[in-house]
Image (cartoon, rainbow, N blue to C red; front, side, top):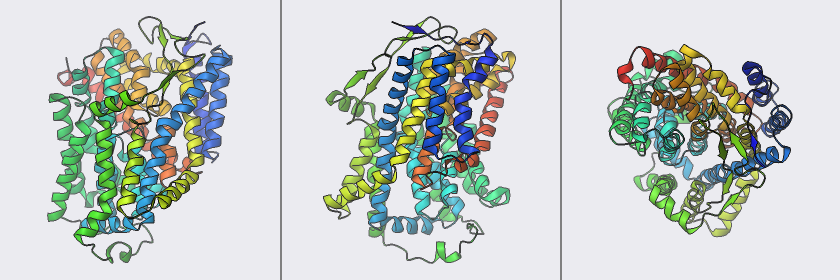
Length: 543
């Protein structure tokens, strides 16, 4: 038996879109305004999504429950697996005392908090995003900033803001690869088009990041560092995406940005050292300078992590590991039983639903191995490693439940078609569609937690609508990915990951309020850029 999605359950598109938005309103409202703990808010959102899927969209209950279970499984693996093992690596460095040395080496390079957030929250985070994606950079960078002495809310919020510009090319270009697959548009043209949009924001984000933390005057004081970090990320981002391809864009751009900022700091330092309120000068500056050997030993876990994560992301390596073990299970009552219908797709298409337990090739496994190898090299015994891991698991147990519930909600809205209803409401804006095209991508990532998933969900809809309103399908499809990156900082999955990494379980609403304005404002700026490209600067559009 199959079931075909219906996108206008109440006859009117906009009424249907309002009903479809109820689970999102319940989830975000519970977090932001009622201060309900994240796992409870996620379960409330999931319950409302199931009710709307079954009662409003007439989805068979067995299919709705199967979709939710599929999402929960995906939330635990691979997403929860990444979070758990990223925090495990961090806990090892803390328990061995090596993170204190990491703090000293960063403070020796730049004791100014603004420079630290540029190096870690923007440049290093972009490297991890390029290699792994799927929440890894937020987990790692937020944990590192906490260890450096950042307040938990600032560490979480700044990591989320910094993890924007690289997202479209994250995980070795997974979002662009998925976009090309669902739209049948050339991957090199999609890569080039995204590479003609995001570099503007790669230049802006460092300034925006510091402004969010230190205010406008504080940002002006370190404008050379913001400019260097941004320019030397944006230029490689444009060049690699347009003249090579999408796969190594973030990794190359991040390394160039880190190197350029490091060189700048050898010749320039801000006149005033920025500190948080109540933070004494001694907190940052009165420390022993670690020896080169101590510094190498302290940074070893992070170097090993970067090497493992990069290696696991190489397509040939991933394909080899998948060949060793990649059991895949079709989801009963769901696999190829839900039909997506026009205008979301050109013709009715059966939705595949499978769970892949690719435990060897999963990014989280590379993080686990990084922790084990690092712990042994740092002198921990196997029993100590196991104890550390169990303590990490205990610390994140409720967050794993939250992630599972969040993904269950996302999968329920996807398979019921309610998210497509919201997408169609954006797509009905006619001449203004280029602007709302970016907001559609933003909505997709906010709902699904993934630029890749948003591209799968809305990529074809963007292409079809672009043809109807008379703009470039390549521009609209690419915009789904470019606009989507700004939704990454408010998606529930990222909020929970940031909360786990900074010990703010229960404070997810505060994190959401911290970043929501930044997310929406930047998404609107992407929309303005795309509108100008569509009608006034058409020479920028890839043909």
